[in-house]
Image (cartoon, rainbow over all chains, first blue to last red; front, side, top):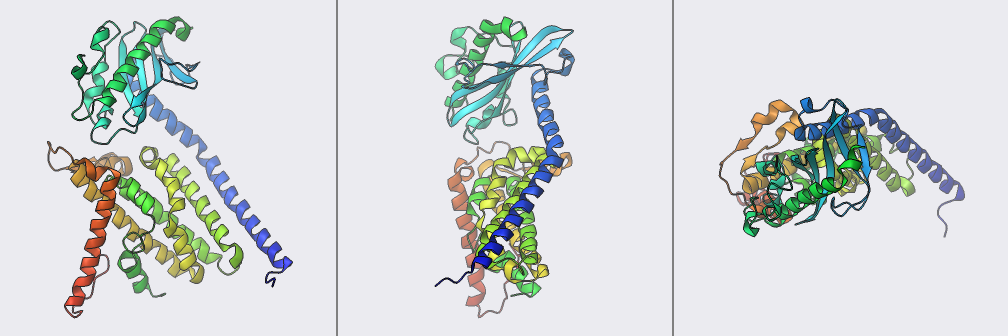
Length: 206
Length: 224
């Protein structure tokens, strides 16, 4: 009936244990030796994204380190704490770069970086993560289309409230052929971020 | 089963992971929207296959058969995690594109299939060669399917090659027609199924042809 002896079970168990320890150790060792370059890589990409919105000659602080945690907010589209990066020149506030979310994309959330000058003008917007349809909605990516640059220099008063829509809805922003939902979501999220900045500017820079 | 020519022929053509065994379809279908993505995942899978086959073959003498599968899974999972971390450290840009698919290699049945079916019964040399050839066969199908979908879907070939091969590789990118409107179906998941079906049909057709001519032409491995 019983074909495996207790001794065999024990040997198999120990064998398995040895392999688990060896495998885990190797992974831990790799994690330990790659940790710093991974953090540095992430930092570089973040820095490049931030500098794409704000040229490096406009600020002199360490923008990656000068951050503030913002509570969840419907205007930012966030349901957890989000981070805002603060750019300063000679100690004076220059711009804030928000991590906002456009919750109503065609295929879920779009994650945006929205740069707002202290004057309330947009420094620029970039979509950093999304799952929109390739070839249609993904034109919000800077790599695919310059559309996202149409936000540069805009503010809550330029255009006015009715201008913050796609052209099909009577606004000032282009839609893409075959995709209106994605640009609509991005436009609304950018405008909401500007509103958030307007209401919280003092808190953000202090 | 252990002669070199046969292993090579099996891996690349006769017993191709993707076209004949139909294993590893999840990553295969998910990443092949462009040629570069396909090649990226193909290389990662190839490395995993060679290493896991080698290690499994090395320990085949003293691993007890009751626990061999958990041990294989442990080896493969550790390898894939190590590859993922190394990729994050060395090719971060490519990792951003392929990142979420790398852990999927663990679920690629082809890897445990080769460990169990070949490496655990053969010496290190043939086992490593089998991993290399099986991996190469998989890589070729990934690259071919990626290229097919990219050409039809976007009208380009090797777009974003610089993510993997550095800045110099940008000139590899071929754009066939500036105004190509794109063909969405090829890029979306259904396009992957159609593309794979076309490749399987093509392979079977190529295999069937010599027999009609009374086997005067021997199929040459790796001609696709």
